[in-house]
Image 1 (cartoon, rainbow, N blue to C red):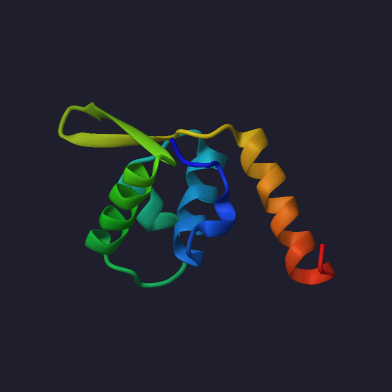
Image 2: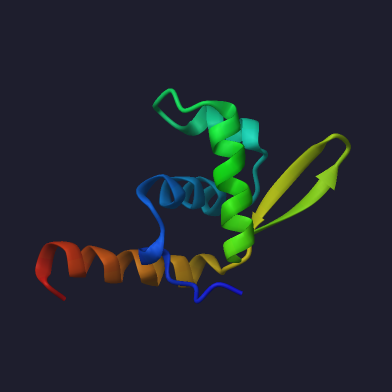
Length: 92
């Protein structure tokens, strides 16, 4: 299991986690559509696989699609986001 610290994730990994935490679950295609740049579908799929390997996501097969779910609680992610904000802008 991940240490549940979103601070150690890249900017793109945090964006993916934000989308999945907000939606509760999502496929790669749903995440890809939510992102506002032109990252390729395969890049997003690879990052979601990496997030799963790191312990931040889990998936279930639904037909031919994988549906990804957060492996950390939304409350824990919110606390990490606040801690990261304070650290970034206010030196803790």
